[in-house]
Length: 113
Figure 1 (spheres, rainbow, N blue to C red):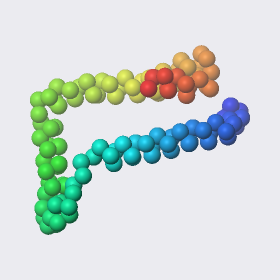
Figure 2: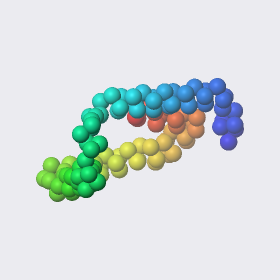
Figure 3: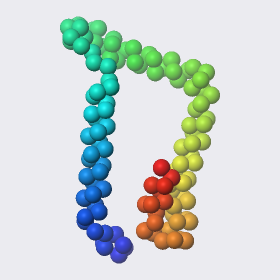
Figure 4: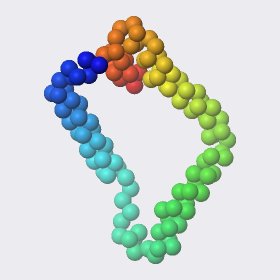
C-alpha cells in the first residue's frame, strides 16, 4: 500500500495531539462534575463500602435489565448496532474503496460519526 507509506508524520502527530487533548479535557470534565464522596464515605467500614460501591449498583443494573423500558429499547439498540456495523464495514469496503479510492475511507467514516 503506497498511500499508507507516503503518510506525512506531521499529520500523525497533529491527530495524536488532538486525541490526547480531548482525553485530558474529558477527564477534567469528569472529575469536575462527578459527585464527591467527601469525608463521611472515607470513614465507612469495608462492608458498607462493599454495599455502596458494588452491591447497590449491581442490583440496580439487574433491575434495569428487567424493566419494561429497557426491554422495549433493546431491539432498537440491536438494530442501531447492526446499521453502524454495516456502514463502517461493508459500505466502506464495497462502495468507498472501489468507487472513490482507499484514501477516502477515513473521511467517510468520520462523516458518519
